[in-house]
Length: 133
Image (cartoon, rainbow, N blue to C red; front, top):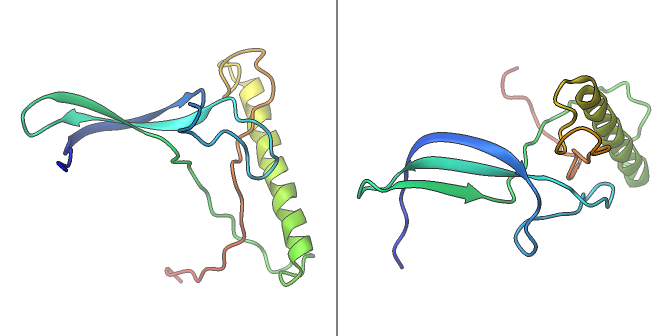
């Protein structure tokens, strides 16, 4: 088959209602339904000069959180680590919902009165070695 190629001009994203059968619509952390999911939009043109926009689904932003060695959690204890991950995820959701409520935009989830949104899709423990010292 032929491969579609697009010379990228702009990339942005939007928060859209999940499409059945295409988007992941349930938080892996809380099991809550996601009212909105991120969709990347890639604007550009083909080699033939046709303008195009490509929508990319199932791409979620991520952050890395360094765990301090002084945490009162044994990283070998899977249940304790799972509990820590859920607590951290709930805290991130609460902080983002609080920030959204205080903003003039009325929330990340589609407007004023939409209620609390689920921002954390998944969370997992990763072991990594810093490469910059």
